[in-house]
Length: 109
Image 1 (cartoon, rainbow, N blue to C red):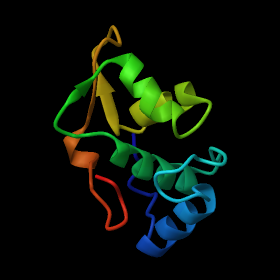
Image 2: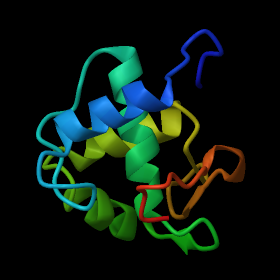
Image 3: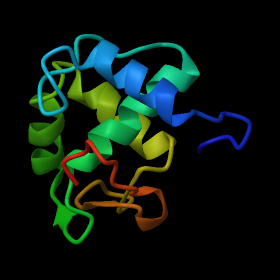
């Protein structure tokens, strides 16, 4: 879950996204950061690649995330752990958690 103590300014978000998505917002992620603020900024950007109005099979989630980064399992796990995505207990269906889907000016969502 997101911690209320972690606040990311719009300027920080832009800097982090620019640094990690070197080919643009729809391009691949160069590396998945370890630092919390950077990780959250990247996850906020990645969630924009999903339609908040639909549900996804695990294979579809993997495909979307795989287009962003080779380790899509880590991305998927982090999106769930930080509360951006939710899923059925058996992993058969995923969806964007509405409270955390906040399209950015630059986002694709």
